[in-house]
Image (cartoon, rainbow, N blue to C red; front, side, top):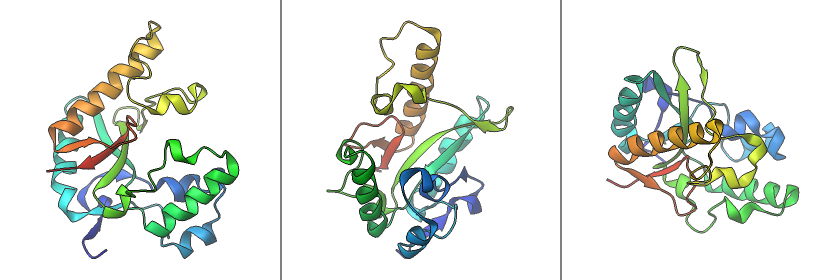
Length: 181
């Protein structure tokens, strides 16, 4: 894609999920390089940079930065990851949209929050809660403090992203947004 830019060139934080966690997902660096992922830098369509910068600025008002875990994903990477996930768990369809491949547009992102003061990524779910915790409102009716905090942070993330022209993807993951303006 011609209109891709690196987010770090605009002061945004992030790292390519599959470059960073590929081995855990059954992928080798050689396979990633073959499909166009050559390092941990995140690329997105230049059309969404202004919205991302504006959202990041708003997050900073409360001590956070926007953290992009993934942006542009080539179709070849979709296919590679889907195959690896099916081999590992057989459950790729639940979280992977192979029909639309929204990340291939460069206008879909997976995001989280970065705590400026602590200089670390903010946990927005508990890993022990499994795949179900990846979806909107998993923590909505929890009464424990940890569950309530996760829901508050996910709601905050959603509210800011929606305000800046994004919407949830069709899988309804709390961290996946498509730019729609």
